[in-house]
Amino acid sequence: MSKQSQLRSLYRSLLRELPPKPLTSSSSSRTRSPIHQRLRESFSADAPHEHAAAQADQLVQYLKAQRQYTTLLERYNPGMNMDEEERVRLTARRVGMDLPVEYPKGGEKS
Image 1 (tube, rainbow, N blue to C red):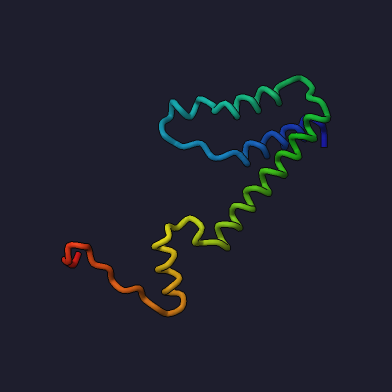
Image 2 (image 1 turned 135 degrees about the vertical axis):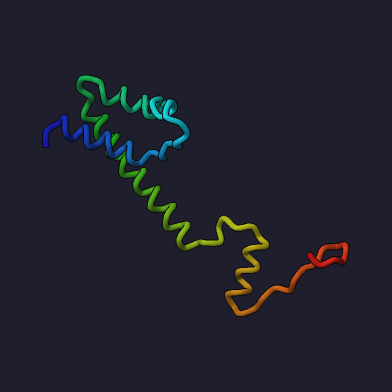
């Protein structure tokens, strides 16, 4: 693989790992975020050093690993982002119990 195609592949890999841009309007889609601009500037230089390319490759590997870690964490710890009440309710349901219905302090059913 030639040096230019390797750098292009590395640049595209970095862009793929960045969070997606929100689609709000067509005029804002033309402007790039500061991280996109910085990446473009660093890769548009005539001949980036071999050390910089190796660092960028390590960054791509790190970002992929972080994305996979987050995905696995969300998959195997589903109650991580729940509030305490919802977690208790789902835990009770898991063992075959339903929590009692709570009434407001006024004594009326809602």
